[in-house]
Structure formats: C-alpha cells, structure tokens
Length: 264
Image (tube, rainbow, N blue to C red; front, side):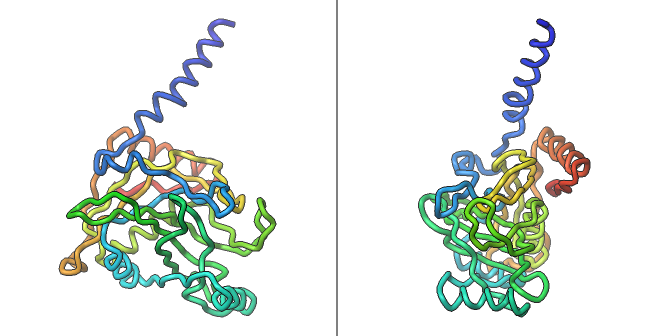
C-alpha cells in the first residue's frame, strides 16, 4: 500500500508541479508572465483564452489585418445586430459583422477583426484584442488577443442565448492568424510564451469545448517602411517546451483534438 501512495504522490508532483514549472517560458518577453491568460464574459463567466499577442501601434495593427484580408468588426448595435441576423438567416455576406463582448481588465475588447469563411457570418475567423500597459520593441504597445473560429450558430450551453459556437482547435486558429499576417509581410518576429497552459477540455463562455497546447504566439509588427520584405524571424522556444508541444500534438491526434504545434 505504501508503494502505491508513493507512486501516486510522485505522479501528482511531476504532473502538477514539476512539469508545468519547466514548461513555463517567457524568455523572449519576461513582462508577459504577469498578464492574465483568459477573458471573461460580460456576466463574469470564463471566456476565450488569450492565445495571440501583437506588438505595435494601433495603426500598425489595423494596417496589418487589412493587408492580410481581415476586416474590422462593427460595434454592437441595432443596425449591426440586424445585419448579422440577416447574414445568417439569408446566407449572405456580412464581412464586418459584430462580435460579442468579452472583458479583460474590466473593459471590453479595444479592437476586433474577422474574416468570413464561406458565404455568411455563420462561419468566420475572428479575434479580439486588448491593449495592455506593456510597451516593448521601441516603446510600442503590446496587444493581447483571443483568436477563435466560429463554425455554427447555437444556443449557449450556459445562458441559453443565441450565440456562435467555436471550433475547438484554437491552436489551429492561432496559427492561421499569425501565419496569415506573416505571409502578408506584416511581421518582423514571431515567438511564443506561456498562456493558459496545456488544456484538453476547456470551456468558453458559451460552454463550447476547446483544447490547446497553452502557448500564446506573439508577433512583432514590421514598421511600415519594412512591411512586405519577407518572412518573420522565428525565435525558438526552450527545448523542453518543444518536447511538450510534440507530445501535445501526439496526444491531440490520439483523442481527436488535432492540436497544432507552434512553428519553431
């Protein structure tokens, strides 16, 4: 009996203390260790995790998304609400459809962008950004964001309200966004830091399941004079983190999660 307890204790220490501590990494931007890792809904329910960040001015962020084919999301209101409803019901485009409010630091998103998938706002790539107090890379602000892909309209499992349901593979959406900005020549550097941490059965504000290797990908926006000059420099993560991401990709394939390992 004693050896069983010893094995259980060793497992708990390894799985919940040692390995999580080894996998945490902020060497490319140490100040991000103190930032939150998840949003909240307007009602205080845990929302989408933060999985992307950009370093640059508001104008640079807006320019980068325009170059990559994304549109700013309209503010919530009667006209925009009716517009997205018509888009979903009549299967017609609404490239600036509004996004629901998520909260970070006590305020709703500062910027939001989207890119339609198909013919209507029923399915779309979208991201919300909040400006943090951090300034890096030439005193430029750090924006933290939550990127997810809407793939259906449903009733919230938590509130019963009509909402979008997300694709659970938020790592794939993170990669789609960052790699798209890079392909458009808008990024100078890309690296990752620890975000919410490895999660296999997370739930967002609508009750939708998501899974993630737990990292946040950070893109340093290229100045306007350098945009379009070539692919970004990819800064490597620590070796142990790379091992974790490889194991995570394998685990995702075994359980049908299909997680995406960060590019190194």
